[in-house]
Length: 300
Ligand SMILES: Nc1nc(=O)c2c([nH]1)NC[C@@H]1CN(c3ccc(C(=O)N[C@@H](CCC(=O)O)C(=O)O)cc3)C=[N+]21
Image 1 (cartoon, helix red, strand yellow):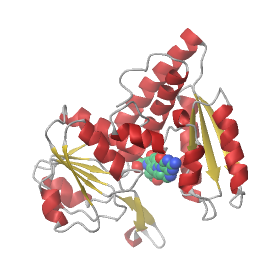
Image 2 (spheres, rainbow, N blue to C red):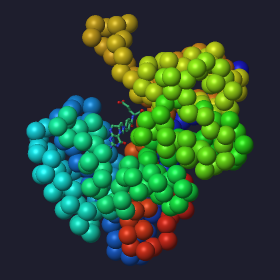
Image 3 (cartoon, rainbow, N blue to C red):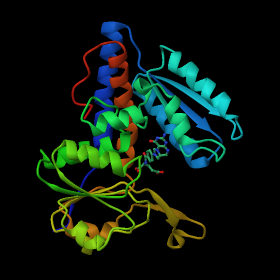
Image 4 (cartoon, rainbow, N blue to C red):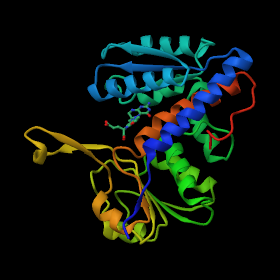
């Protein structure tokens, strides 16, 4: 039996609709418009596309979008001064600095300067610590999106064996914390894990976030397992014509879908959830900033 396809694109559209509903209520009842500031340093074409999509979806949800584009050689001090201004700006409830940044800048130094209350990426040390200790945190958008898809598909996750492949600060580690928070038995596998196929074969839930195209094949998957593919890898596709490329995940879709109970596609799986969760986190940050009750159904 081939796997059910988990439609992240549709789920994300639904989530954005809920976010828009909360935004409309914040405006009508309190005269507040949630605002998201996105900072882009340099002109990486992929980043430009993401930032444009974020801006468009922010506006479509009824929120204010503030885009700040800085030249690739901007001095660190100028970037930090901008972050200071955004931290102090009451119209800005969420701040995101698009990564990667040019080599002369440090991602951890940048994140450290963002007000943790406005850190909608959930990357500030304070939010990482809150997440790890089970307190109200801003959870990073991609793992949060994966958790929502898993809960929607499986119901309560308590007691399930979850294997996260990849140990990045952006996805692997916070994903493991969120799954632990839902009472899964969590294993983090990575490039040094021995017998990784055997480890993954024990999983009821597989989250692949390594950034290696089609690394996970169907023979790694326990029959009926739920597979969440976080990878977005652009590879050459000569079969589509000279110089053409296509997107693939960290899982080999065809073979995994033969064995899994359910699987997310790439594109159209986790990617759209990331942006929808960014909007959701911005509404959450806005409610917290104004001492309002946090909206139900859009947070972890
Ligand atoms: N500070 C920071 N926070 C981020 O969250 C962040 C970042 N930097 N840098 C880059 C990565 C990447 N990222 C994606 C968001 C949406 C899709 C997405 O919507 N993808 C679609 C379309 C993919 C396509 O066609 O290119 C899909 O998978 O269906 C992908 C990737 C957020 N990132």
